[in-house]
Amino acid sequence: CLFFPLAVAMLVALGLVSQVLPAKLSAWRWSRPKTLSTMGQFLQVGFTTMSNIALIPFMCIQHPMGQSSVLQYNAVVCGTDGHSGMVIVGVLLICMGCIFLALLTWLVTVAPTKASKGDMQFLQSCRFLLFRFRVDVWWYGMVVVLRGPLLSLPAVAFTDSARAQLLSLTVVLAVSLAIQLAVWPWKTPAVNLVDGTITLLLVFVIATASAFVPAASGATKDVFVGVSLGFMSLLFLCLGVMLVMVVLALISRGPMGSAQELSVLTLGKGPDLAVLASRFRDMSDVGTQMSHTDLIRTLENLSVYDLRGLATAMTSLGDEWGGALAAHLRTSRRASITTKAGKLDDLHDSATKMRRLPDGSTTVSLSANQTVMEL
Image (cartoon, rainbow, N blue to C red; front, side):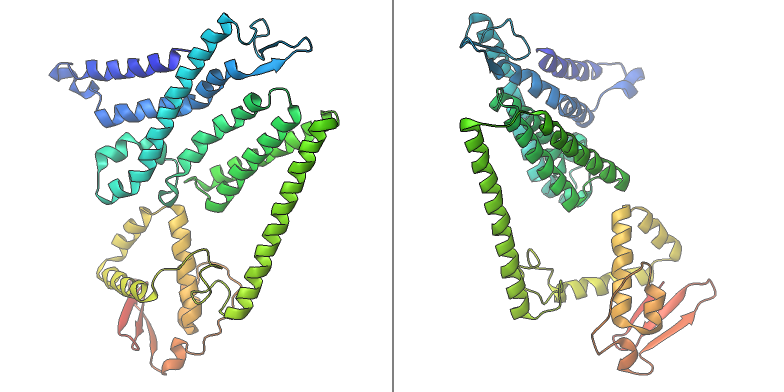
């Protein structure tokens, strides 16, 4: 039980000892950010195990004779001196885990601010929490850390009820799966697919295991009937919300999913179009000043999600502008119909001009707004 605090203390000691190494061995000195990241990585990996160990003393199963004993140690009767010692150790580990969770919450909260200020020391120190996930879903590490203890809690809260444990596990896994599918957090797309598939299979396993649980009766049956009614009520509430959204969409009559649609339907306001247009123009000006090779190097630094998003945006803009430019910018397959009447080709016969450069690239000149893009 003391393994985790002793391991952290050992890492701290090794980091301090490395600082007094002679100059010839300076390459072996541990930097503080990397040492902190290693400690965090160790605690993050061991957090689920630490939580399981800490919760063992609180898993007391009831016996027919009235006494209860620890689930994993039947010889230890709950409430005795031997059990009290286990509870003390468990409470200490829980306190250590709560401190770790509070620290992670603080790191996730201040990470965007620190990143915007270029605080590399901070980012290297919390690399263990951030580096696996997309930069716009930096907080997902908290979901991964919390999922382990939440999967262990049902055995503590419902030690004598297999049905309640299975239901709780299903809820935790289903919520985590919904969050993962909503934000697609892992940097590697294949990991997202594998993680989601594993979680879904775990839900299937739990659903199958419920077939081996005897039918509920008495007070237990009444409780589960109430829970079922609660879930049904939430289901009908969601259907009601969906109906309201349909009515609002009919009233607003804005294009579905467009910037003109109500913010309640788009889950928040979109970016300001004037600001976005200004920044897009500035970005275009910078792009025209860069060589083709520099542009490729810049794109190489983007994640695969950003590259796919960029390709989708280029295709969307091409569809809006229409004409030869639409075919030139189309980089992804789409099923769309542009309803705007004012495409660039319709502005003026000479509004859109394309010419092929000697190096094979294409320059598109839009005389309507004097913008030049080299593609």
